[in-house]
Length: 211
Image (cartoon, rainbow, N blue to C red; front, side, top):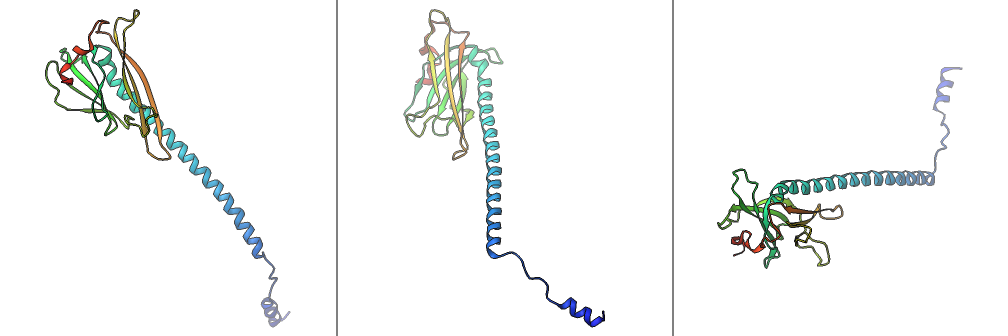
């Protein structure tokens, strides 16, 4: 075969058969569906992981708050009456006998509606509180969007014939990450004031905080 024949043969057009536009459209559609399913699965996986992490963080926050309160409330000399102000903030006072100095001091817990926090302040017994607060937990549901929704509360449990001490129940409901990914955690604990008596009058516990 001469050189010219080889050149003519190489330049001869080949087979131009391929895929049609319809076949290409179907293939593209199938690939789009597969990618959509895959992407949705990955997004849901990340959302579930983030939600679990938020729930764990929220519950850890509650646990830390109660750990800080446990010793104080357990060895309290008594709980004052539960009371609230016009802004919807809820308070309870107690006498902390487990101080580092050994001198009892007054303490007050507040469910602060404006900021959605559980906070605490302390002051020497017999003196006026100075309104110096330390936040123990944030994201606390004090004033829920709807009246029927659950909210955090303090409750004094009256002594019975089988209990010789005062008891304080604290229900904390905490929400984090507002929106579709919102998580809620709740803790409901009852503390017994081991240094109190069934006859302890709540009105005598740190009355300067209620004046």
